[in-house]
Length: 237
Image 1: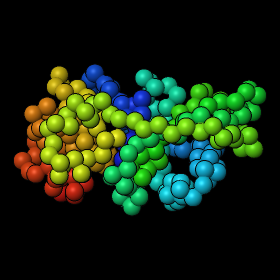
Image 2: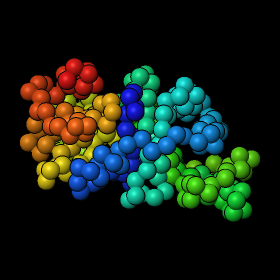
Image 3: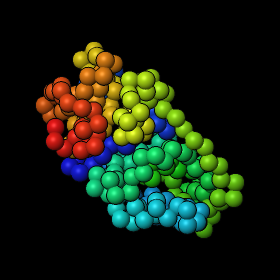
């Protein structure tokens, strides 16, 4: 899992994995599987059909930014992407508001009926998609309907819970899509940034900063400036 960043669940869109204990959290954040060829081809087809304004997304997919997919039991139709860290840093646009492309209809050759596809984008990155019955979905690439596509913005309720803790300068370095809460050893933390191998940078409700590792499980409090941690993507910590 080296070199991956977890951008899962994420949520209605941004409601990432919420877990009640340490075991479930780390279990669900393990890499689940590789991206299927049909998933990659479908994303490229739809985003290409939408025109040049989505070229940044087709470029990153072709570059191999999606290294795996993740699932969340609370969102059975959602497939979140594990993104390559180096390519994430190349394509990321921190100021870009997260949004969803919906009302995309594709014929499922296995059922003969159209399925609704939603694509989740944000911060210059392709984050995931939603479709019913992923395991039996067999898209007909000649039957893609984007004529009634809708674009809707999303906000993170969990981010709003802790937004007041940060200065305006700090907010510039925080990705809303990376913020979600979890409970470890009966204490609530907020995930801020993924590191390698499932480790991450997080804070508690008092804004104490931690590097949290899962193998072994350790919480190391960082007595440093939050901006320094986020600017350096946690590498020096």
